[in-house]
Length: 303
Image (cartoon, rainbow, N blue to C red; front, side, top):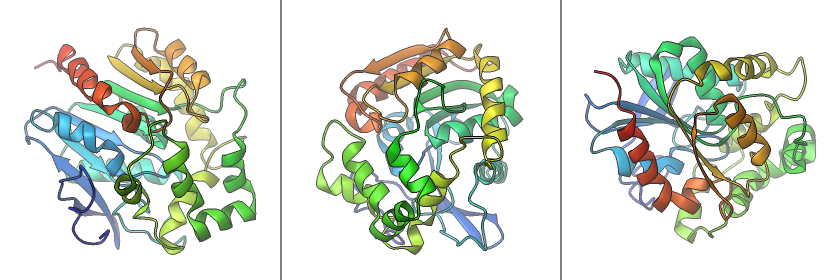
């Protein structure tokens, strides 16, 4: 099902397209909505894929052009080995640049981000600050780990220990468990199967592990400089309209991260839920999708 039709995925009635972002490496993406609509770029994290954004795409595509990539190694995109692709944050930012350039999207955009998508989006935004007009931010971070926030042991296991890597790639532990741990409202079985479907064997789970191993904790880690620079740049985007939607039961991007975001962006519109988790769009899409649409309508792009 992953390599062919996506019609078996619940609430995902889309026809993903593919584009070569590097020699021999194709990225899968959604391009939904009118070609002349305001562009909303939706960036997923780990271990999800564009499926995470399906409800928002369905709620916006009548008016907005929704660009939703699956990062290389994730979702329906190619999953090269380490010899063919460097699985780093910088690579993700470069891939996004290539995708938007090849699609001819050179005007203003709204960035909608979740999990690692926040850092990928901010990495791109630092290159194209004048083009980022609005933010939709869901359970993420755009800075190094706050001092008051310890590194969750579940991530340390995969990042630092061989046994964690074995569990992630051998047993799909991260993607499988996230579909349970990441929600307060239990996923229906067919939705859970859609989340884990792209990661059905050792080879196809390479990126779920490499994302974990790329988490920057100290100077010298590959992503440290970019994430540190993002944290410094974050306040410079405080003048853009921003919608923050947060599941407060997230054990990674918890209230420490939300507080850091609101300190940097004090004018942001905040919708937080005591009864929602990391996959906040799964728990609260009935509330969040209309709220995000209203936010976009209240902050139209200048003609």
